[in-house]
Image 1 (cartoon, one colour):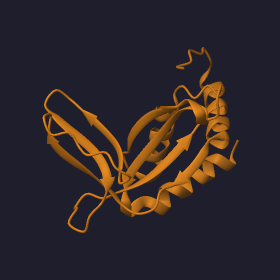
Image 2: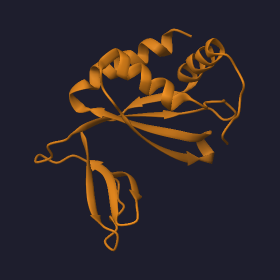
Image 3: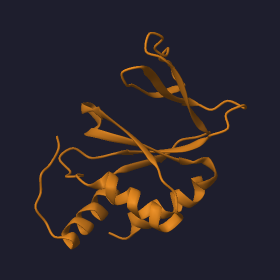
Image 4: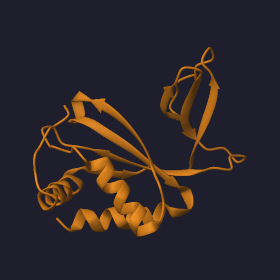
Length: 143
């Protein structure tokens, strides 16, 4: 469920610090990469495929990286507790990572009703895995 809340910047900051502290945070092993295929050739879904999405002409999916992949990503996940207002979380954390490390991120969201609802997969350049994890752990401790 998407929440609508009216709050000051300070209230939003405090709420999102509580959200990041309450979320289940996991650093996925290995490196990840994107693959693409024409719309008529969807990916085979298997345990190596983390997410798949399409536009009007092509499929794109995130899968374990191979040795020839030039653009490699570290991936982190957040599962949020049921009933927690996490609205604004993506923009808030993406801005913090950009300010702190200079990096952009990508985010893929999903829903699992048995694990609280919304969850996010976050990707960053693989070489920043440790630095991104450190920033996230620091934010988790500041609530």
